[in-house]
Structures are given as structure tokens and as C-alpha cells.
Image (cartoon, rainbow, N blue to C red; front, side, top):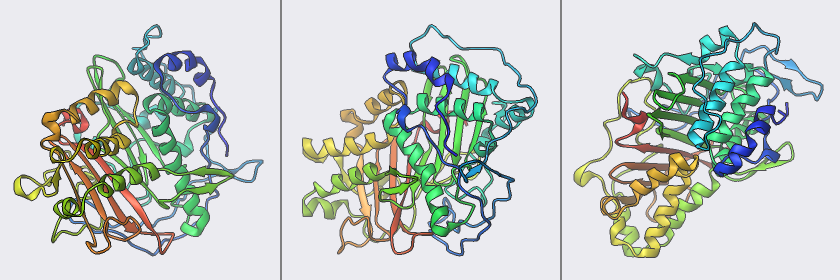
Length: 421
């Protein structure tokens, strides 16, 4: 079902224009596909304790209704029990992007019925375990927090899109749309009903306010936004993005290419190295079928498996030329800069100081004879700084056989979950 642009988007437009953020309203759609019961009999990566085999199976048993256009209308009836308006922390006169996000989040909450709010809203206190529940697997394999977006009313769905457009910048919102569309595409290619843009979940922890700790958690298969706010400062980590296929694809006459630019930027970083530098950056004796520091799986704790000391491996960014360093910074930005500037800019500034770059390595693994080839299963690329951690792993296709697809992770060794666990 094609979702229309919401009235709330129009009301926030002038504020968003001042902020220089938000998505492209001409491409503000997410399709909801036909539901069919199917099982995917394939499996993917196994990288140790922090990742899970991407066996991506399961049946979607939600009751959907068919709309006039022949697609499944997977949204709830707008006539559900009345919503509860919460005490407002919204500052409508502010030009801050964070304040705009707080206002949009409150507007989303106010579209929900009492029972829906009970599903979406979580207390902040004692939420460490719940906040670390996210996965790279379809929701049929790992249950997410919150409410399935395919069950939202049209008004609630539109309000959620407003939240996403303010949280993310234009490029980040395009990635968000593209990852969801990729699941619809996988269903169209015979992957089964477990793949669907409707099978993503929204949860909110704490009370959205500048002087509170709170969190937006939005995710499903191949996407996990875990954005924590502490005293008005946003930390968009850990962040998982992936896509199958990794190349551009067309769905409903629209072309999507999520994570193509991310992959290209990582490859460009290594293509600029000399043969000696490329050899120094190679992680000899190491192999990766997925990212190393993946989903936290409800551990309630920070990961402990970052390589340290001599085990870090790779080539120091500070040893590279200015032009080569610029490519590393550009690759970082493909993940960090997906968010509004008030979130992204301070992080990029911290990650790219001379001191930080003097302790940042780039490294790769896979077939040394094939080189950095993202079409080869097992090719692995990473940026390892004192704080920033970005991985890209190339896996064989689960639905689209004979092609690789991307799994990526962006984490902050000090500020995952806003350092609030």
C-alpha cells in the first residue's frame, strides 16, 4: 500500500527547512507486500558468539486485508480505542533538530491508543536487557521490542515517518526506505512472507525530553536503529544496516540502492592504497563470514570482543597521505552522517581529530589473491578507531543465490546506548 505524506510532515516543514534535515517528500513511500506462507531453507553466516546464522525462516501469520490496489493493507483500523495524550516536552518555538524530534515523537505517541502505547512505550529504569534486543535476522526468527509497523493506523504510520525523516538526514532516510523495500523485493523474489516492510518494529524507551534519557529503537531484518538521547545529546549506536541484494533494484517502478554508496566508499578507501599498504592492511590468518561485533541479543551489556593491542591489525590511518585519509573519513561519514547534523557532527569531529586518526586502523580480510572484491563471499572491511567501529562483511545471498550481500555495523566503543547500560 502506498502511504501518503502526512499532515504532520507539512506542519513541521518550515522547521525542518530551517534545520536542513528531513527526507525527500516526493519519495515518502513504503510498500506493504502480499503475505504468503513460505519457508527459506537456506542459512548464512556463522561468526562466533556475537552473530547468529542467518537462516531467515519463519511464517508471518498476521491477518492482513487486501486494498483496492490489490496489495495488502497491513495497517490497523483508525477507529481503535482512543489515544492518551502525554505531558508534553515539545518546544514548538525551538529551531533545534533535537527539539523537532521530541515534538515529532510526542505526536507519534499521541496517535496511539492506550493498548498500542502499552506495546510501544517502555520504562527507562531497568531496561538494559530490553534495549539490547536487536538482530540482523528476520523478525520471524528473533522477536523485536515494541509494535509492528504494519499494524499501525495510517495516522500513526505517517507520524512515525515524520520521526524517521527528522531523525535521519536525506541520505539516511533513503537508506531506511531502501532497506525496507529490499525486504519486499525479497518476498517478490520468492523469499516468503517473513520478508516484508511491514515486519519492522518501533519501541520508545523513557520519556522524550531534553533533560531525560530516552531511546528510539526501530528495526527488523537488516536494520537496527538504536538511538539514545542523554541530556539532549544523541548517540545513534549500535547501528546495523544490511541489504540483499547489495546492488540497485527496482520495486513498484522505483529504484532503490541502499548501502551501495557505503560499500563503494569502503572499497575506494582500499583501492587508494599501494600494494605494500594493502598488504599491511590485510588481516593475515583471519576470516569473517559476518561482522565480528554484531547483535547484542538482549545481553544487557557492552560487547567485549573488540580486538585490542597487537590483535587490532591493519594499517594506521595517520601513516597514509592526506588524500588517502580523506577517503577513510568519507567512508566513516557514510554511516555517521546518516543522522541529523546535531547528532552526526559532534561524532564526526571526535572520530577525525589528529589524535583519533593516530589510533585508527583500516583492515580487510578475505581472499588475498582476489583482493578487495565485494562480489567474493568472505570479503571483510573495517575501520577500527579508539571509539568508532565500522564493519562491512560480504555474504552469499540467502534468497538471491549466486550474489553476495552486505552486512554492516557501526558502533562506538565508548558511547553505545549513550553509555547508559
